[in-house]
Length: 216
Image (cartoon, rainbow, N blue to C red; front, top):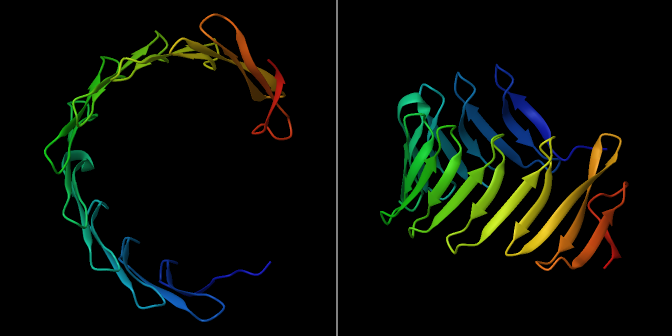
């Protein structure tokens, strides 16, 4: 099989400086001493550029239309702000454990995250102040997610940390793993709140992504 692109030039450290396709159209690349991409010029003459700090963080990217997007960093190379090419600015703040705690959008609205003592996300409040809650079992597995509208989705797991069921708004979906060698093939058994069995699907070993209804 023939390649559609052909490297036609390399920098001293092996980075490509020119890549041409069979028709002769070429892209050109410029790298710094630390192998970070500085410029790319496409076959139509469009030019992009990148600017980096000494720690290897990308400070700014200029696209082919001249738009500049930028990122600001703080201690431990944590991102503090992202500024889009249109000037929209998102600010990020972290807790003492360096977990993302809050995002402020260009309108000043805040999206916040709350964690438990084990570092698990237990709540998030979106830009409109709506809260989503999360609960876990002693093994740290998600057991319940409650939406801002009060809809709860419950999860159960087996001893090997495999999801076995999900219940949402009174409807139970049991996920039964069937094994072929070491590969689990999931089968879904749907039940209503009154215990009536819904649809049963099995999956072929050759194509686990395809389902066949086998019962009602």
